[in-house]
Image 1 (cartoon, helix red, strand yellow):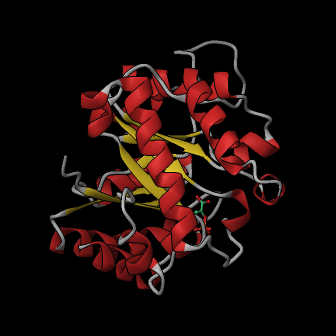
Image 2 (cartoon, rainbow, N blue to C red; image 1 turned 30 degrees about the vertical axis):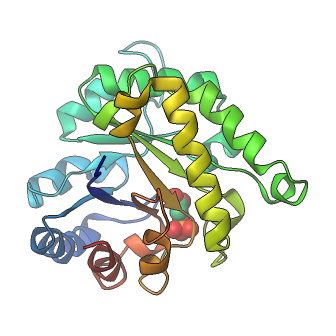
Length: 246
Ligand code: PEP
């Protein structure tokens, strides 16, 4: 099945109202590349303004709570993200799994809440450097997938493979290693969701993707796009990645 490429920027805890001007160049590049889906996930506080500034560019959240509402100080529900104008939500990013101790079960519940709210869930998985060195990368990613994937599939579900040691480090796996992991994820999706629902799920690579390496990474079989941190903060750095995907 042909899947439309998806390039998503994750601003993490970066950006202010001033940074929203970067969206103008990003939205223009996205408009010039209709064969690629592009989205930006800024901090929660910027979602509403971002969605209003560039209405054609999907804006997303970087996390959400699994519940609808209640006594969860500091948390935001998927429904609240909908109201702010979000169309996608990243769940299970390794920075949250590591720093907030999020479990696979929590990530799955969040992904289900995202999809139930009518949004697209990007579920992140990826091994640590120690796990890769010990030859356990595939086992780790496969355990995360079985534990974190929502029961739905199809185009409302995206999986991002992000080796933790490649995030923000300037290091990337070899293209062979990326290909081997994405092939395993694709096979697992078919087992877990069935061939038809798995066929529409896009698998993104994330971890130090830049304008310089995007074309090579995107040429690897089963790499359907990218999840980009540092290089998504400015139009100057992000637009070449959109162009490489087009
Ligand atoms: C990320 O945090 O999702 C990521 C891929 O970051 P970077 O592109 O900065 O490695």
